[in-house]
Amino acid sequence: MRADHKHEMKLRRRNIALTVAYDGTNYNGFQWQSPPRVAVQNVLEERLEKIFGDKIELAAAGRTDAGVHAFGQVVNFFTDGRIDVDKIPLAASSVLPADIVVREAREVDKNFSALHSSHSKIYLYRILRGMASNPFANRFAWHIFRPLDVAAMREALSFLVGTQDYSSFKAAGGAPNMNPVRTIYIAELFEENIFGSDILTIKLHASGFLYHMARNIVALTVAVGRGRITLDDFKKILDSRDRSLVPATAPAHGLCLQQVFY
Image (cartoon, rainbow, N blue to C red; front, side, top):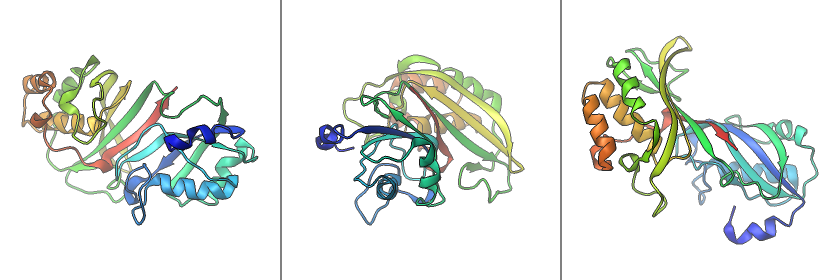
């Protein structure tokens, strides 16, 4: 939602919040892009206008990067459209492409903001293990062929829990002067079988995330699992607040914005 339009938009009768899921493979992230580049926001705004009959400008809980997925992205917008909220998901399915789905709709207070009202988020990162690829998982998991030390990865993640400065995991290009202190409530790894494949899932629940923070945490945790760095190295890098010590950012397609809390 454009800042210079916010006052005008809030004069409309309704504030609608949507929970949206999408496969980010074919999009240049969530945030609106100038054509011919296409982001999820471009598609949502264009197609929702057909349902509500007025110009739509969205605010979103998170600006996921190109290739990143979402199951629980939350957006809100102001409208004079009269459609009942319980009919919005079905109406949206008739105008949206198959890789973007409105899971839930609700009418919220005028002061609700999908971005500013949230107090924490959960991201999941999935890793496909083993020599064999899987066409049903390839778009949603980072395929790692070599064995990983799962116990060491779990211990490394435990170092992240708490309130601290996560500058070591902040990539260049994020919002300037952003406070690097966050609280991570959960940093855990669990094993799943998805479509017959061995999947490791890293779950990160935090008060907020710095730019590329989740993917950089995954990159350093995988380095421990591969035996490239020790647990002591992991802790020293975390404490150093030096991003240059972290390996290259983990691939985008393994990451999913799972849930936003309000």
